[in-house]
Image (cartoon, rainbow, N blue to C red; front, side, top):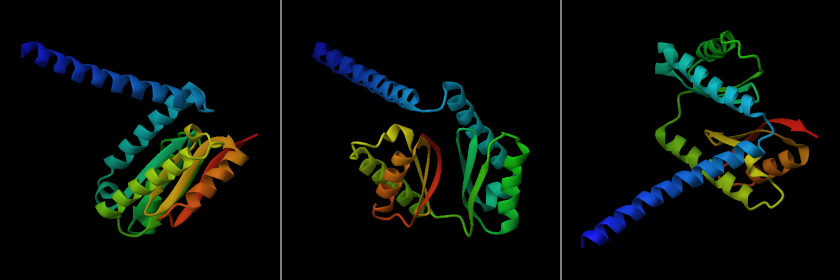
Length: 188
């Protein structure tokens, strides 16, 4: 009986390790296929954190808005909702004052912050778009970042025009997508 329990514990532990190895391998593959240098990928990740922290430090933005930022190749995509243009502009100014260097794509909508149900639906839409992209043999999904906000799908990446067009087509034809916004940087 003790041998059986030890074997079961070993299997559970090994399963956890295998999962960690798999996540590490997939993450490594994504980093290796990314057109951005490793340094740029790390800078983008750091900028995401810096922006989130700066937005959360402002009590009014924290309490009254739902704004996030995604950084890709030094450029910032700002999405979410602000109840008025004053708060939207304030959020953009917070990011501008960080002097991160890239372009700021302001896609913050004027309106009340979305509900938990809407955000859950956005997660589902992102999952569906990515799943459909995986079925496209000629599309390298590791080069496309998909972000959904209130039914609007934002596509980011540093990719060739043909890949960008295919990604847009897949997203447009996914149930629940209200609009597709391209924030790609094209390479040839």
